Length: 111
Image (cartoon, rainbow, N blue to C red; front, top):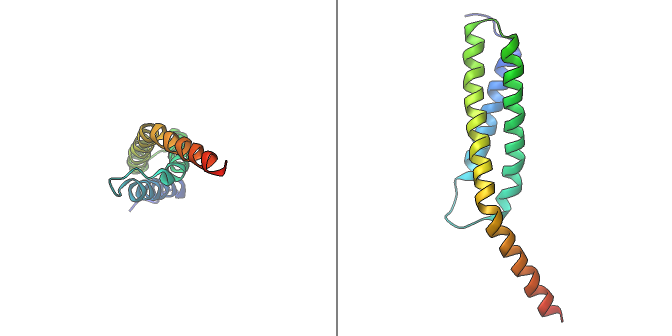
């Protein structure tokens, strides 16, 4: 087995953890849960960081095994970024609307 640089394996593990956390937060009930938007936004930023790290390490990789590991990590992180951003974009409006209605009803009840 060829010796692998720890950077490629570390990026792959980070991409797997990010994709797993995104999947666990994304899969849930049918109701709109606005509490999941902030953690998904953090995971989207982390996925973007992993994508950038993949490209940086890919430029320095020398073996085909390293390139394959980085390609898998890049696909995982890119898919996680896309899915998280899509979820946030689709539910941001309804969550803001619900928050606005709750704010108005609490202001009316306090008067």
